[in-house]
Every structure is written in C-alpha cells, then in structure tokens.
Image (cartoon, rainbow, N blue to C red; front, side):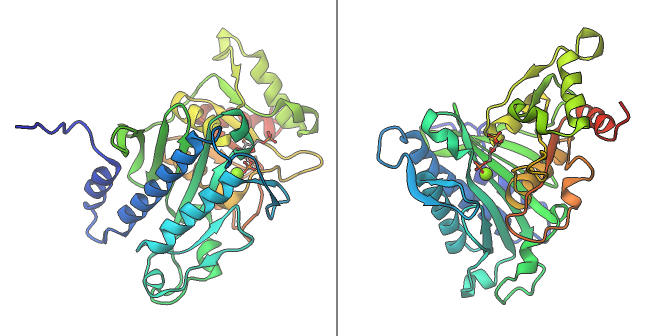
Length: 339
Ligand code: AHM
Ligand code: MG
C-alpha cells in the first residue's frame, strides 16, 4: 500500500487548513492564493528558459514609469491579471505595468471580496544576467459594496488595511512566501510535482543581523542622517554587533528575502534629485512592510510607518527602510539626528 508523506503540505492544503479555523472564511482567500500560485508557476517556467527563447530582451516599449519594458514583464503581468480576472476572489487589480487600476466588472468579479495590487516582475533589469527576480502582491478587502464593480477607494487604502501580502522569488529555487494576520509562511516549488510545498513555516525575522543593503552609488545624494547611518554600518566591529556585511543585489525581492530570513536592513532612501526615491508604495513597499511586521520587523519611510501612509495614486513612490527591529531602531536614531 502506498504511504502518504504527511510531512509535505502543499500551498493549497496548508492554506485551506489554516483559514478554515475562521468561521467567516468563505474560501475566497485560499482560492486567491491558489490563483496566484498558478500564475507564479507559469512565470517561473518562462523565467527559467529566458536565456533560451526569444522572450528575452526589450519589448521595444516603455511603461508608464518611463522605464524599458521587458517581454517577461508583460508576460508576467498578463498571467497574474488573467488568473485574478478568471478566479472567484478578485474584483480588480493595480499593477506596476498598467497606467491605471483595472476594474474587472463581470458578474463573478463584482461579487468578489478582494482587490489585489502587484508588481508582476520586480527587478526585471536583472533578467538578462540571470539574477533572481520576483513578484510582489498585496491583498485588500473591498470597501465598496460587494455585488457592484469595485472602485478607486478599494485600491487607495492605507497598507495597514492589508488582509494579506506576499512575494514569489524566482531564484536558485522558486519560493512563494505569504503573510496573513496568522503569520508568515514560505513554500518552495517542487519542480518534480509542480507544487509549492511548505518549507519555511512561521517565518520570523531575527531582531538583528549583520547585513545592510543599499545602493552605495547614490551615497553622496542621500540625507546626512542616512549617510551617517551607512558610515556607522561600515564602522561596526565585534564590540557593537559587527562587523557588518554589505549586500545589494538590485532586486528588492531577493535583498529583502535574504534579510527577512537572516536578519538585516534594506534601504532605498530618497536622494537630492529624487526625494521620494524609486520604489512604489502600493505594490512594492506596502506588501513587504506587511510581511516584515508580521515577521517581527519594521518598515518606515524614514519618518513614519510605511503602512500608515495614505496613498493618493497607483504609482506613488516613497523612500523605504525595512528590516530587523533592532537595526531599524538604530537607523531611527541617525535619521532623527540623535547620533
Ligand atoms: P523595477 O520595479 O523597475 O524592477 O525596480 C525596482 C528595483 C528593486 O527591485 C531594486 O531594489 C531597485 O529597483 C534597484 O534600483 P537601483 O538600481 O536604483 O539601486
Ligand atoms: Mg518593481
């Protein structure tokens, strides 16, 4: 008789088991994760063969941010938008690749509880050079009336109203990590069976670490407080938790994933010429802020909690500081000029 290995829990099994503890759960959130997992598997296949087929390279257009769009960005956007549109849980989306929010407006979607915002392929400048990239997503319960098309107000909610958030990393292995108020869990894709399997249960971010991640090339354009903190990182020694190591992949999903697992701090500060930095609040910073807080860390814009910022438009940018609790607290003392 075949024995079933109950040590292995698939994403679906885990999510259904975890969420059925809630009397009000209708299965829509588990269904949403299943849809996102399906899109991620499709994107993973294309990312893995990016060097082989003519899907690699510029699509010859620029996105709404004025950046080159890679073909895989478009492919990933279409996959995520497609599964959400045809699923039963999502009434509309916001995406880095699209000018405006998309209201699905069909009978099933209008009766769905959630809206989702995502960056379908973050760090896509790294595709050509075979470096890890990822997908980032954020889930909100609608504030508009279910049964009708969703509205802009559903998308422009502060991050502290997220119901769930997560990311997929297409790296040396492919992972799907998501957070709900029940905690943060990570699933690794088993390519042999094509399933995400629970591999990193109940992820907690160590309260301190020795990695700092920042683009040093912009050093002289950062504020004095940020420069002072970076200098302090370089001077750390055994007496005060050091020495520190600098790691910056240029792919936020990979940088923040490493720091989440091992402890560390990631910074994308504003600069003299770009005071709001580069990263987008709704589909890059808010989801990671939710995940890190659920794992015991913190995320700010240098002044306030990221998730307390009231968004005003889809592609809004913000300076971003995220990581281990003690390191974030120390950063604060430099930014506020205490040190
Ligand atoms: P993208 O959304 O265009 O891919 O840009 C976001 C990426 C992040 O993953 C990464 O942390 C950052 O851009 C790197 O930017 P820089 O090269 O300016 O340091
Ligand atoms: Mg991005």
